[in-house]
Image 1: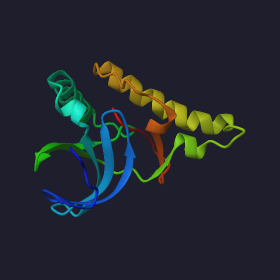
Image 2 (image 1 turned 90 degrees about the vertical axis):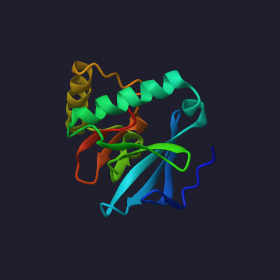
Image 3 (image 1 turned 120 degrees about the horizontal axis):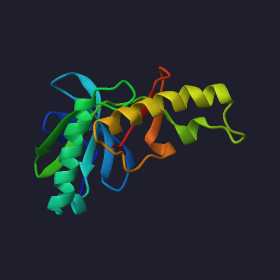
Length: 153
């Protein structure tokens, strides 16, 4: 499956690619039904054609969606349209940790401002039986509002 991040898919107007990882490609889209920007993740064909991985993805998406925590990205939907399997989630505007950490590191107070909400979010996920599986600096964002968000569960 080739994903074009221009055009439309269902009621989403696709605008740009934001990133790519092991499970799929992430882009920005505009939800024309709810008039809001969202992040949209298309699953790689390797996931689509592996029933076990697809089932795990759907279970984890449902579990993460049920968490509803301020420091975990909100998943809006799991969908299929025009032969594409994708899910939509909150679009976090901000910077990943690698983009925020200066060469000489962060001062301790700033480390704690990031680490405490991160630990709280991961603790809540673990208490619900959810393991992130890919915690790394590029999956942690600090939003323009200063809120720490864990991405890519």
